[in-house]
Amino acid sequence: MTHSSLSQVERGILELFFIVSCLIFISAGLIHEAESEGYEDNFWAFHNTLYFIIVSLSTVGYGDMSPSTELGRGVMTFIICAGLVIVPLQTSRVVELAGLERKVHSQSIIIMSTILIFT
Image (cartoon, rainbow, N blue to C red; front, top):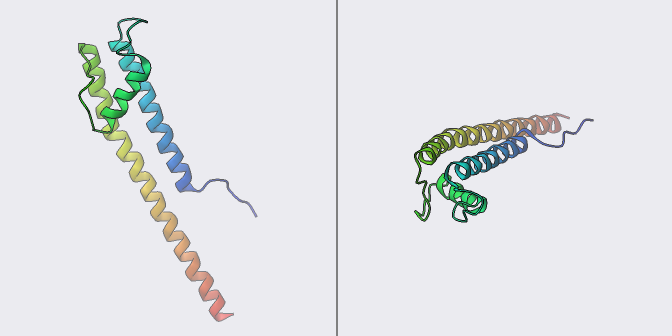
């Protein structure tokens, strides 16, 4: 009997987490490069840029930080558009997998109960 370590849904959730994490860290790196004025720039330090990206992608947007250069605004526009496309697509895929898994489990329960009734 083979036992897979992760179900399709669990694998989908891990993929979603990995993709969102990559989006956040790559975006933070891009904004850091576009906005930072050098090694000593504490305002756009990487940890502050991570905060800015998470707040922006979660659509909270406190307004305490915003890109000031043309390049930074262009990069941020691309990041927001990518986040609005990638995250819902991955989330719907996980929900679809969960629905399929539920359907498979409910069918197997019905088959097992039928077998038990007629045996």
